[in-house]
Amino acid sequence: MESKIVIYYDGICFVCSSVISALIKMDKKNILHFSPLQSKYAKSTIDIKYLENMDSVIVKKNEKIFSKSNAAFEVLKELRSPLRFIFYFIPTFFADFIYDFIAKRRYVWFGKKEECIFPIDNPKFLIDK
Image 1 (spheres, rainbow, N blue to C red):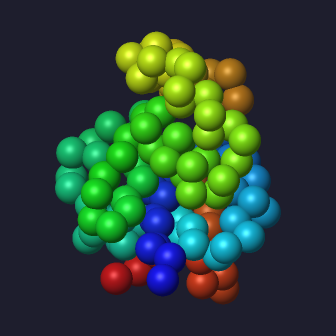
Image 2: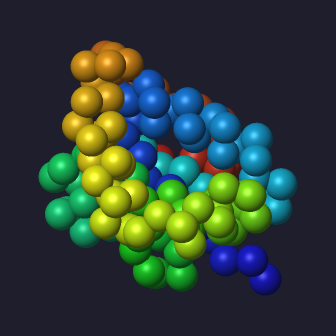
């Protein structure tokens, strides 16, 4: 049985929402679930420290938590994406540096939504708990 993977993301970030849309298309095994960090589900299923600073995607797999580049690489590995091999060539500290650089500037560069909007009728999105 495939494990359920929950990707917690910043629901007001245009970049994050675009990545989530791409991941939905890539998820052929139907193992990914999504929850905005602003949702009740996120607030009840992950530690508050991840909600205080929304500059990182959080991935929860088998009760293990991944953040920043490790979260991205974990998802790419599960999706069997060719990009998963980048993990072997780029040290984590450097990948996290690039991740942080973009994350801290994403609202300035790409803007943000006025409010968190998510598809209520899509079972892949975990909102309430």
